[in-house]
Amino acid sequence: MNIFEKGAIRVNSWADLPNPIALMHYRVTNGPGEISEITVGKKERSMLEGLRNNRIYAASAARLSHHVHLLRSKGVIVHTERYYGEDQSTKFGIYNLVPEVIAHSELEVSA
Image (tube, rainbow, N blue to C red; front, side, top):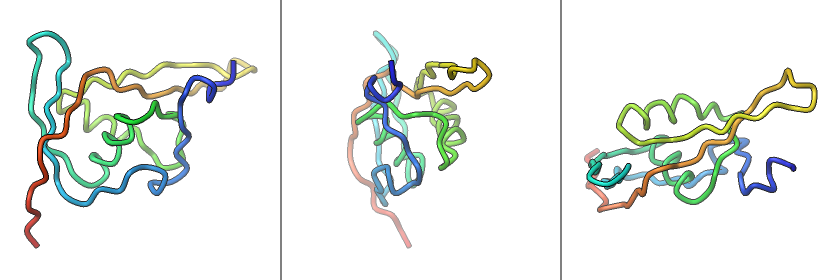
């Protein structure tokens, strides 16, 4: 099965993801009783909003893995499904947001 038939999007540049400017509060529910609050902005928020909408092809030209790592360090569970190419030497993956993530409110960004 083609990886893109599984509903993942390929991100060739940051323009392929939502481009929010302001910081946003989110409530993250990783499981029963596992609720946390995080605040993210810029590329972390772009990545989180993208994951809220779609599964994302991990072998990206936009170097998404650093921002996935930052989200993970804040307690957001992002699962990576690993796949191998036809020659079995090429590996790639799809990022999938595991928890329920709900946006709370936009914050004022002081200049």
